[in-house]
Length: 82
Image (cartoon, rainbow, N blue to C red; front, side, top):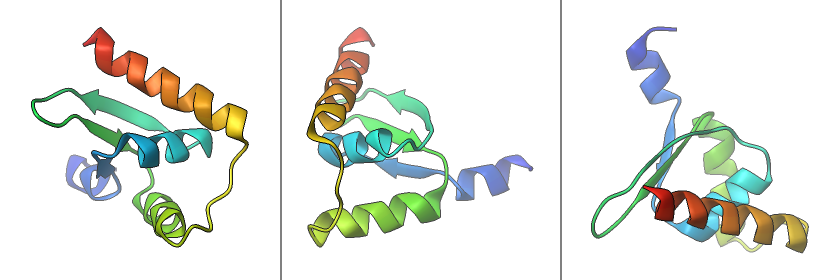
């Protein structure tokens, strides 16, 4: 896979709660870019990410509460470490 194809398959998001959902669902977190005023979470598999984010906004996404909390705290810790 060349670099351009890889970039097209990546999914970037600034919302910590949606990122926690994706992380809880097992999508691969490629990198976190910390910025002011917003940080960005970059995941692999754009199509799955888009589907899950759409389900999030339709209030149809479901995950275990404890797993979501763990993912949320883990991502927040990654933001603070940078």
